[in-house]
Image (cartoon, rainbow, N blue to C red; front, side):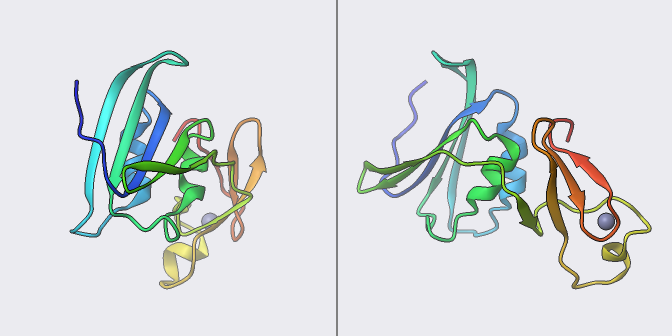
Amino acid sequence: MVIDSIKNGIVIDHIQAGRGMKLLSYLSIDNENDTVAIIMNASSKKRGKKDIIKIENVDSNSFNMDVVGLIDPDATVNIIENEEIKAKVRPTLPARVENVIKCKNPRCVTSSERGLKNIFVLNDEENREYRCVYCDEIVSMDKE
Ligand SMILES: [Zn+2]
């Protein structure tokens, strides 16, 4: 499969196969002008199979690296400028995320009070568990 390389933007490589679509939904790309390509089950020397996401013309400064770390801390983020890799970033599991994970507890204050930020903090690094700061609801990103 040949996919055009992008001139400016972001390429998220080495995503664990199967996690690409989930990552894309969490990235919430709503800009109508962004060109996005997702490649699923590409062959990978490192992982056997991998997913790749390419986003054209996205501003790397406003790109939410935490989301990548949350969904797949083993992915690689390549920042492309003028068809060259300007930087390679390894995301890390974020200690705290705002408005990325939505609390599913119906009794949580975030479900009744509109405008309140959803804030989750890292609870268990090994199991990638996050905890809602308001109601202590636990979300495991491995199972999500
Ligand atoms: Zn909550």
